[in-house]
Length: 165
Image (cartoon, rainbow, N blue to C red; front, side):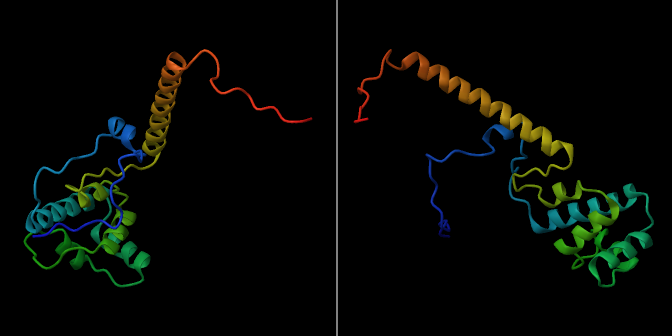
């Protein structure tokens, strides 16, 4: 199998915007290949758990999803999504979004992205991550400034250019 080349070749000189943020919010690293059936089972279990944790009846969740999507979602469909034994009844991303909206269980996004090496942050966690990243960037810039101050010559090498006044 030939590896697919990216349209955008890797540029080692380009910085990584989230390099410091990864230390604050460790990203899940893939543990190996996740097969389709493993993911399908995990997603069905997570949907079942989210439906239970929401405290809403499945009928109520189905009604809210129907309103959000503008297409009918039945309680039977939710039961199929929540059952690992019901092959061929995988939830689409559009319906998963509506399910998250109806249940308020945002953690479902982390389950949906398991094994991809990403972490979903929401609410105040986003602000804390941004503050942490800025603090680390400030510290890095201060460190670079101290290094330059130690290594730079005492006076400028190039004389100042004077023009006519």
